Image (cartoon, rainbow, N blue to C red; front, side, top):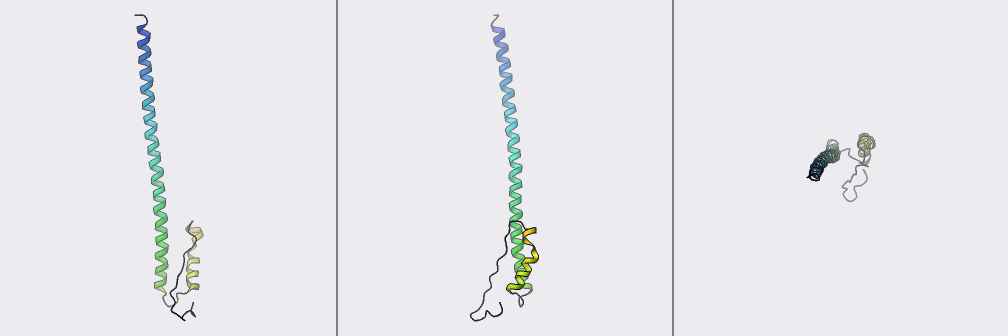
Length: 110
């Protein structure tokens, strides 16, 4: 009987310690999942923003071509792209390419 009381107390304290450890662990795991969700959402938003920037630049280049169809040359396009200030305003974008369709023998205006 004298040994039963200390053993019972030990078992109760051990059970409480185990329960507390379990709940703290679950709480920390939930907090980590929330933090991961926030970081993942931020990364996805950054990717969407970057893709939208790329589409906007491509659309603006097409609009420039339509706005000045008779004066659309390599030089005018280069000046347009320079005016966009890609390096400062659109980090990561190295440039916008230009391809002109030139009929045979019609390359004098380029």
